[in-house]
Length: 239
Image (cartoon, rainbow, N blue to C red; front, side, top):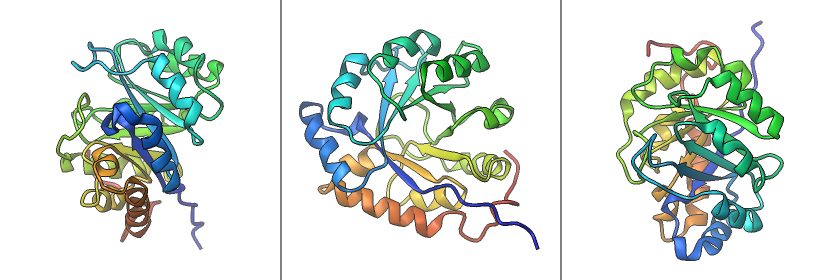
């Protein structure tokens, strides 16, 4: 009888890129009331992507009110330059997720992040082939599969990424795999069926009248649809 591998835990991340910046503490408290697992923080340098967002000073403030780990999503050209500034304002259990498309050598970044005490995530953009990260899956704690081209909230979910997601799940049945971009009650079932166990939602949470309930709803949809109709040990497909 074939041994069944355990599924990774279903988690919901609230992306504060869509939160009210004038009431960030209140927004974070709302999603924590809904049982959110991660606070997803998009950090952009204006070079890797055209947008420019929050830095260590804002993260330091978020840490004062967050009761759950942060996922620092670094959309930057040189992630190694940001490790120490964010280490100083982060805590145990926080993630530092960098892009395979960045200019730094990925294994060097992974080593530096481990030395700094971070959990390590690696991300790839919609056009990037799965092969770019396949050799690193055993070295990271989190894989982030972008379902939009990074830089701005509110973009449309790219369903064409799903075969790549399914393929990467087939290679790592127990790895935490997150999707980010256009995540809402309509797209969560699609992503979950293809193997994502963590949903990072921006407007899909903070754009709702009741963000706490939105977190609960997205969790329920993920749980209902995770790898529905598929064997996690055998799902595959081209990418």
